Image (cartoon, rainbow, N blue to C red; front, top):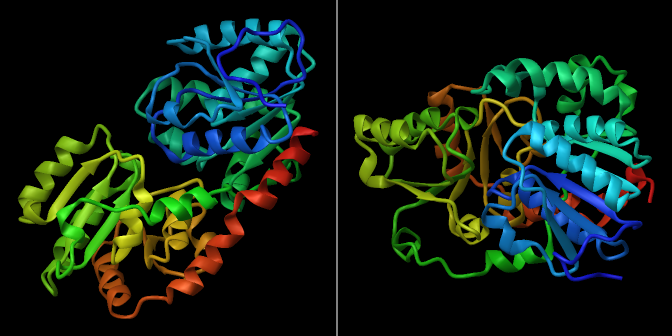
Length: 376
């Protein structure tokens, strides 16, 4: 049933569409590729992107057709999606992230399409919009979501906290929103964790390495992590590796220098296989001010790595079962974060227990819930 991607667009099809802005490295992008791959086991699947760019382009499986709308703006994205809906006529479309969701609902109305639209919200919307760098995201997107999301056929949130927040923003009954956890864990993840890491800090006899992963943005609050690392490093020798790229890199580099920890901090950039790093780290640390889900926490658990996280909205506490599977600390409190890091290094949760917890976030089972909400 699978077809080679990038083939010619058919005039009439029974395809299922997964849509996201691009395939730049991030949890949502990784999830979109994974869902498209899982759906392609039984369906003809298009992965539609506004712009075909990003590290995960290479991860699109052969059984999924990649459709590049070549849209540099929201207006172009909307117009070209209208054309796609009129030409391809998919029976269901899953829009990943809120901008994609708003555009999908609007495009269906303009195209007069009968496609079933399911929108998937990945962040605590009110916080994400309040801290967005662009005026459109801060002001126009909340209005678009509140107007358009009630017209969607299905609405998915990655956590209960995201669902409650979205219900308020979109003025929806909470019952309209289905909570489906991210299908984070796969056999490929487990296999990738066993790959070698050439980084010299992970060699035998080296000091413990803390790991963080995620875009270098305000949301991830890496300044608090650097301050916590500096405080913990006064008690024992440690190193810190941060995986990810973003606009905050220059400021974080300056802060590491001011704190006197630059020699023991490596902002290693984006890597295709963070799991090998996770499996070898002494602890994984999430310092975010807010999250929609926190894929990296589940990924670290699947690698058997002890975790420490801020108790931020919305998902870390749900993933870690209120601290049972990893220590939780208040947002922005670097002293509490430092203490939790040291306590975790001294008394980590058993790796077998962590992996068992992560198994509840496997693709199998979760994909069935997506099939239901998509009407498959």
